[in-house]
Length: 580
Ligand code: ATP
Ligand code: MG
Ligand code: MG
Ligand code: MG
Image (tube, protein in one colour):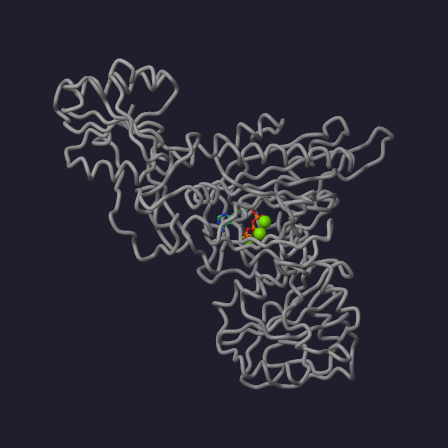
């Protein structure tokens, strides 16, 4: 039982200007978090309690599903990532750390990175020792601080640069066993999000830069989300728009073919994405699409390239196909979801945008008009490379995104569309990470043959989930916590603190609630009742018990559930039993 006067709950009357959406305002106003830097937050005691509750619910469901908790380092030697399949695609989103003693001049290759996710670490960690088929069939998870250098952190904990994630990883001997594990984890996710009191749906998702066989996202419907999901209730089909769209654009691109001789030409005044040009993507040819970008004043110009291993090859004219069109940053994010593997590269490139200057939209438009592939060398562009014979920029103008009303691929009935927040994401990875000879995970099967483990990975944004709960569960007065997540479940508001009878009763009722398993906050502060009620509503405690002088005289206390309008007067003698 905690006393408000001894706690630190700095509630705010007004919401700070930094907050745009309700849940972000309430995180600040209820004294749950404070901003330390862009996308970087401190959890104050009340926020930490709620966060811990979300974490605990998650761990409980993971444990029930047979996963084992471990803890990996957040600072990771860069070599793990360099050896893995997506170093170049993912490095822009990683905070890169020099080794102690390294000069201020940052080395070309960092000694360490701060982990944005941990496939590259856990695969060799488990793979180096679990070398028999008997040791397969294991799932591990951790709850850890993750770091991503998001270019546009926003909405508080929703898109932060440092955030709390539960990340899990499974290792199975066979594809069927991996599918069974994946389904078990999906079931655990359903239970976890339900226990958080969330309305959510799981949708088919793109595998993106993570790669792998298939994937689902867990989505909380909300207008402030960054994703769109399409669904049809009757057929049960639900997918991220990116996923629903994928397959459409590549088919269109089949028509694209190289034209003309390849020729370099100077484009003075146009700076280019040097880094992108220098570095190979290391994404296998044929399966992947690449994107080169122009960055304009307020526009990005994408060149989507199919079937080349690295940008270096683009210079040599070995591109498969290319498509050029102007697009806004958001459009690029959305559209690139249609190109397996390219999303990470694109996001990485855009992450670098802040470091670029002086790339002009009008110049890029001119280049697009000339049928030029892109910025692949400083102040140089390629002419006549692989632009579709009859590339009709307008035709690709909207990247053919699935729209509401289009037929559901299962039932043919019209699809509905809904904006949503991605709170969890699971992937059946297959052997993408385990295949690596040095940093992979291979086991010896019953017949003595070496086989790569069939892996899955399972992420939950714990801190994003916390804020999503607030986004979904609030009213004009504040947060309306679900019981299981509430930082305190019962608040006892003492209107006349210092009055012995009131204080004694508060303690007694508090103990009763505690014995019944509830966590209790006693508001023992001096102050007007109105202020205390407002605060109690703002911080969203599910049950409020009010002890006031007048009620005491009548032998009564007031009880009010946060999610109900009516307040009940309850005889003191009965109050204890209500709480129990
Ligand atoms: P998003 O599409 O929102 O950028 P993501 O697909 O990059 O997320 P994953 O790599 O799938 O994220 O990570 C697993 C989970 O971690 C996500 O489902 C989300 O809940 C959470 N998460 C990812 N990035 C952030 C972030 N910047 N801030 C808070 N939570 C995040
Ligand atoms: Mg992301
Ligand atoms: Mg995503
Ligand atoms: Mg995801």
